[in-house]
Image (cartoon, rainbow, N blue to C red; front, side, top):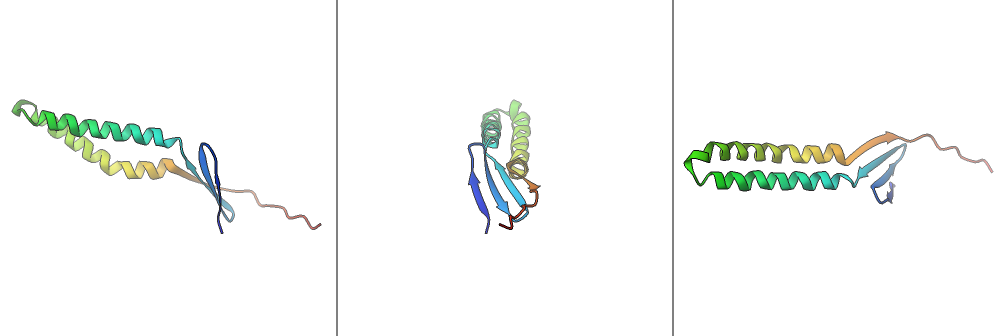
Length: 93
């Protein structure tokens, strides 16, 4: 059964010989990414109102779409890491 320890900056889950750490600090990076993503689509939508700026709007839509595809992968990569824990010594007393 995994042991779960919730700290201020991370959650530590003990899985046998391994510990899995989820970094809570990544939330700020994720929120910044979401704000930028919203801006690309908002500005792209405004640029689509005029024929002269539609190409720039399209580029912003493509950038936002790529960011939507990359976002879950970045969250997974930055959210956790796996490390081997040292073996525990048992007392014979």
